[in-house]
Amino acid sequence: MHRKSNLTRRSILKGLSTVAFAAPLAVGNSRAGSPSGKLNLALIGSGGRGRYIAMEAAQLGAHLVALCDVDQAQLDSARKFLAEKTQGGAAAMERIRLYGDYRELLDKEKSLDAVMIATGSRWHAPISVAFMKAGKHVYCEKPPVRKLAEAREIIELVPKCKVATQTGTQGAAGKAARRAVEVVHAGLLGQIHQAYLWCDGYGPNPPSHNRPDGEDPVPAGLNWDFWLGPSPLRPFKKDVYHPGCLRFQNWIDLCNGMLAGQGAHTFDLPVRALKLDYPIHVEAERPEPLLETLPSKGMYRFKFAARGSLAPVSLWWSDGGRYPPDDVMQGLKFGGRKIPKIGCLFVGEKGEMCTGGWGEGVIMRLAGEKTWRGVLDHEAAKSLPRTLPRAPGDNHVLEWLEACKGGPATFTGLDVGAHSAEVYLPGIVALRLGRAIEWDGHAMKAKNAPEADPLIQKSYRMKWLS
Image 1 (cartoon, rainbow, N blue to C red):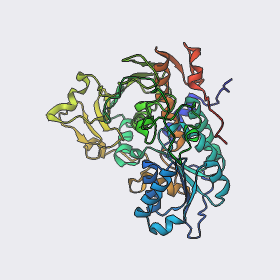
Image 2: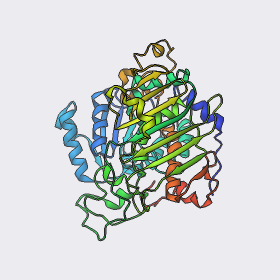
Image 3: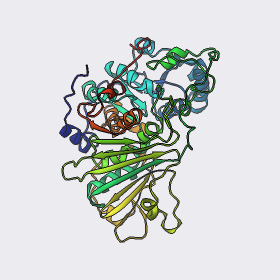
Image 4: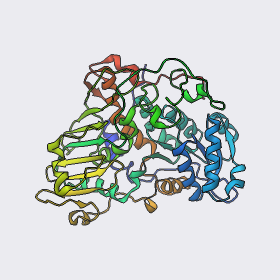
């Protein structure tokens, strides 16, 4: 039975307008444990994204002490990559300790200050929770959770653990993205009744399908059972699920498709700017029968009630080559302007604003204006006071490292990323049910579909969990 959360709509809105944006949080474990005074850091999940964020952290002064992965080939490749990209080269990387089990890493690395997690999303919440409870700072790649119950767990845990956390939505560090939030909060665009998000950056997926027949030999050095972790066991098939997020992302048992994979980036700005709490009505289209993978093209609609003085708003998400309607996008095409393949468009009573999928390239125009201008250059935006903090050097990793050392709180802590997931994951529930849902976000219930509970709550295989 799900324990009723003590979160309230008022507390969520307060968090979106204050703590989630600006107020410094108390930060625990702010020591610098290495002899040089640098943060002792470990990477869990050493694939392409993981090794790049570890490289950036090391170049910014963190002391990388350990790598952890269930795939020995990934560990070897990551160590070679980091030897070429970080100070100290191969000699420093030879001193790096390698682990195949995050639990062993946590037990043995007594001087560890912080971890960066870049596994698949099936592992993000369990590993983040384990390290936060142990008092370690956590940077976790997006999407931060796979299930709605995990999002609520993260939101409630972050303030209790008093560690520095960061969701890997790096676009939120940009000054244009933060200025865009200030523009909406200041009312320059007027009341906003519609926002459109889309992703056409990775091409359409194949139609929803089941797993291939048969089983292939598991590569030497890969613990396939551990790789699956909390997700149901399935046979290994070469080049179907591993390696790389674009292989496993669309399998329903493992992830939540492009809605979560890219949506974790793109939803951040409208959730902040429009102070979205929970959708109250969610629709999802199925362009073909739903089997074991997400559909070839996604289309979701989320309706939100009024929030204080803010009007009700509908937010649409589309992917796989689907864009918002032509009449909505027509203004963006003025003067031959190219539509971004991944983006977000706010349609307000007094103006419009468009951003790239990571919150970059923000442009706006007010009613009566034919020309779009950058949000940092528009005269009406220039005069607005700065109400949100700015990341040092617009750098997402540096912002987290400084927070780990006791500096200002991060802008996109794991609780903030988890709340964005609370906004978009009801779309997956509606999709899997095959009908619209009336959503009670506080209780995490589909009011018209009690059979949705297994899709909402955690259902882990416990073999590899602490």
